[in-house]
Length: 424
Image (cartoon, rainbow, N blue to C red; front, side, top):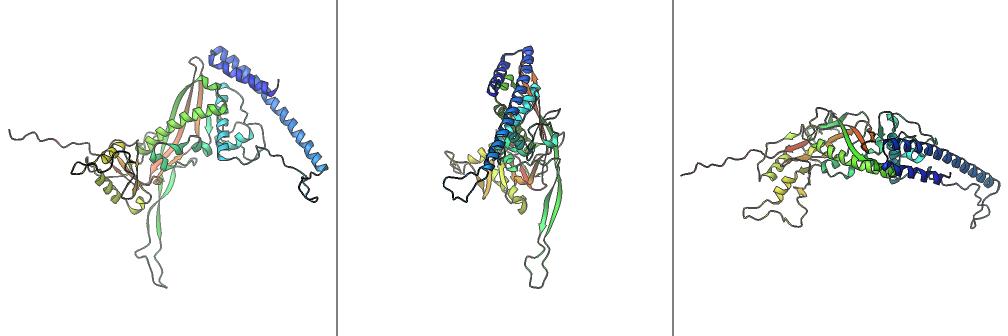
């Protein structure tokens, strides 16, 4: 059979999976293994034939110089290079596409107990083999980014892009920009700086030394398993479509999890420490004094902490401020066809849906450190009787805010009692 016929046969077998019971599924699985082996051998044979043809062409070119039609007689091209798509530098879009295909192959192989055969570009996209010309895939360890006996590692160099974390709905998490430094849980941060008691000096008089005091920020470790169930019909998709579907689900769950934990994680019981933990917390404000509370927060933070800071406010706080009225009962802001409150005293404002009613946070999100300390791993499992694929993603992240870099405000939950003891 030709390669095209073998590929068509494999697609037919995959299409039968949707209606197969457990016994039939096992038979289809065995047939797919045989077809995969035939495809592999056919591809090797075609590759050998292609290389032989290229070698013959190069020998002929060496014996007979090749002239271009409009060149001078002394402009001789001895060899014309053959563009090899797998030798070219990949663009970011190409790398992500090949990474998705590779991930889809890995998950499918794990589910169906098939041999993994990654192309050179797929290996390069995953960071497995950037310079090697090897065509056979060897299951690497975690450090080499690939498949092991436990699960499938999503390599850190493409995790952020594959999950599209830069497109998250949470403004705070989007501004944090997580890092991917394996095993790192301690990061330096600037505590304070000083230029001495005076700024300028006369000639020949030594200037005061500029001193910067550094502290060590130890992040709180978070351990998060995320389990998602999908139907077996996904197996009929292509490897790229399969990976895209899984990553969309996973990315959505990761976004929801981290957006909440980056704000309110307790820092204990295998949870990261959210920005509200350890932040400077002011006195709870009362309804109608939202602007004053934000002013207090801005004045409380140091000049260094205010540099690049934003005010992140809850949706309820945003509505309270937008619908605020003056003493004449008129709205302070136009409530129709407006962009809401985008700044306060030149400081940018963002509505953070993850904040609880009445809460707000002020600070530069870059002063909150969030790091993926190990490769995110997927454990897929196929349940033939229930026709469900269950896969669990294990995230190990560490997160914490630098001390005294954020201000956390809350609305008072107490209400002023009504005096009903009037004159009777």
